[in-house]
Length: 213
Image 1 (tube, rainbow, N blue to C red):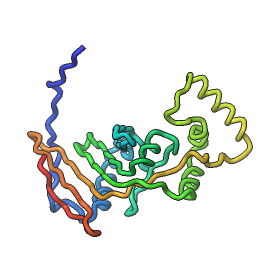
Image 2 (cartoon, rainbow, N blue to C red):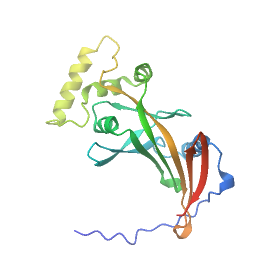
Image 3 (cartoon, helix red, strand yellow):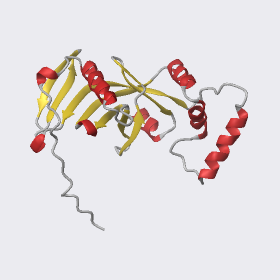
């Protein structure tokens, strides 16, 4: 069945983005916008689409949660045997997208990813809720499972196994840091003449250009 969607159209009228509005440092600009996204009470403002490419050039995209951002990059955690981790192992170049559509905004980040030190992963894992720790042990991410019952049975086994002790960091679980070399800040405008500014890293300096919408 064909779905005709031409009538789904919204004019973006909330605000503008000018060169004078931008911080010179893209991390500062990101944190400024992120705080505004939090203040607007958006659902999961730290949710970001992560795009990767495998060794055969096939792309993949999924949503992960940003857990740390500083001038060293953007950090998320995952199963190291997942498809995203396998992709990163063969091609560390990735893209991130923060779709803050309620604010008529998007932020795109392109960079190279690298594993975070195991101690950092262990420290974060220890602060996770116990249920999330158990979930990390249960799920061999992206592998085929026979049923939901299989997962729940494995969960109960682990609840019993770790009943009287702390849950250790699985060997197959860790974090990745995306170190950007490009940021793009996108603000929706009327008539599809959106405001777009790209920061590009060149010899340690961030250059800022306005892009055509």
